[in-house]
Amino acid sequence: MKRSGLPVFVRLDGRPAILVGDGAMAEAKRRLLERAGAVIVGEDAPAHIALVACADPEPVVARLKARGLLVNVADRPDLCDFTLPAIVERDPVTIAIGTGGASAGLAAALRQRIEPLI
Image 1 (cartoon, one colour):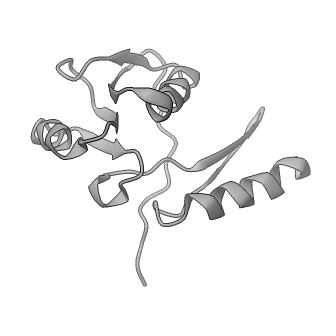
Image 2 (cartoon, rainbow, N blue to C red):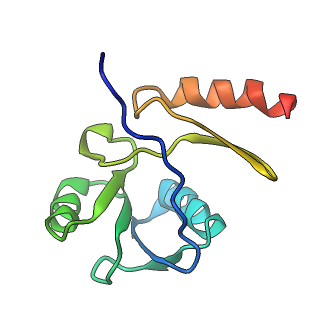
């Protein structure tokens, strides 16, 4: 049985998180980080996690992983140390729906079905 990882909720409030990239996908990642309370910093700043959303992510990922950071790369689960799930938030409940990067569409469809239930 293939395992997709350990589901966790990471507290980022006030903590630095690196964001590398531009465009719509990077802006979506920025909104996620901001909603989590992260302090978004550049590639060379100290941090523990990084989100990458750029056209040529391999060299960026190599630099970040060489520093020991956990890295998420938009649309490239093969390069990810962690994936970002589809999220349903209804205070105080948060539901994360993950596929380990295998099917973002399936996770989004499940999120849409769950949202009206809570």
